[in-house]
Image (cartoon, rainbow, N blue to C red):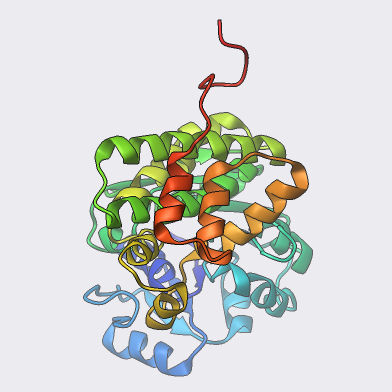
Amino acid sequence: MHENVAVVGSGSWGTTIAKILGDNNVPTLLWARREDACREINETRQNEKYLPGARLGESIRATHDLQEVCERCKAIVMVVPSHGVRQVAFDMGHYLTGEHVMVHAVKGIEVDTFKRISEILREETCVKKIGVLSGPNLARELAAQQPAGTLVASRFNEVFKRFHKALHNNYFRVYGGRDVVGAEVGGAFKNIVALAAGIVDGLGLGDNTKALLLTRGMAEMGKLGAAMGADLLTFGGMAGIGDLMATCASPLSRNHQVGERLAKGETLEQIRAAMFMVAEGVKTTRAVHAYAQYKGLDLHIVAAVHRLLYEGATVPEAIRDLMAVPTGAEFDGNLR
């Protein structure tokens, strides 16, 4: 017997998580902002705008009432874009209690404060048992039941156990960990590298170039993670190298798409106007660049992507910057 689970956010990833729960026959409330979106899901069993072609199970019901979500479900997955988390969490805070457990699946950072999503949830709600779900999880592939794995990280074993029971199945493997900081940093940072990877692919450069970018991207992920208190072992798992590989290689990745389109001559404004889903890496680049300057961190790839997005650099200048990665010792320490 499964407990009720709520998914707050009905974009492509939120709808996919709801579909996984539905495939497991978990009673699921899927929160959507718009009443017409709720009607479509409830009447047609589809969310054609965000997850076309995927049929949602009968155990899923959509609602736009956050009070109903909180009163009916003690286990909640937060899946709204990073810029909307604080307001939605505040709105939910009136109805949440200490009995609730929550994980978020938001791969971003609040730009103005550089707060991680779990920090925002703690500030805006009374929920203590919080975790993060992060990994190489492209929504379209999972909606088609192609095998994948993910990490649920939390300081509380109960959080992992409850969401493992709800989500784990024969095509979605759920692993556990305790490093919330590392999982959040990995999930957010890989989007910046994916933007750069899209540029590499858009210019038709080869696998050697991509391998250089991803390897040095992992090194910069580690630098940022160390500054924020992450366990560096986390970056060798699902929420680090796993997510990085999938996001940087797949044309399904929105961040990769943005980089590729920039390389082919579109402006950021044109791309944003044409995309109705969020590419978190665009905002995360600005936030991480500001944090790196404040902390004195040398994040070369972040700086190069920032120059392209926000400082007027051209694509040829950006690729020159990306390929001018400093050399010397590959790892910190003296050459011997």
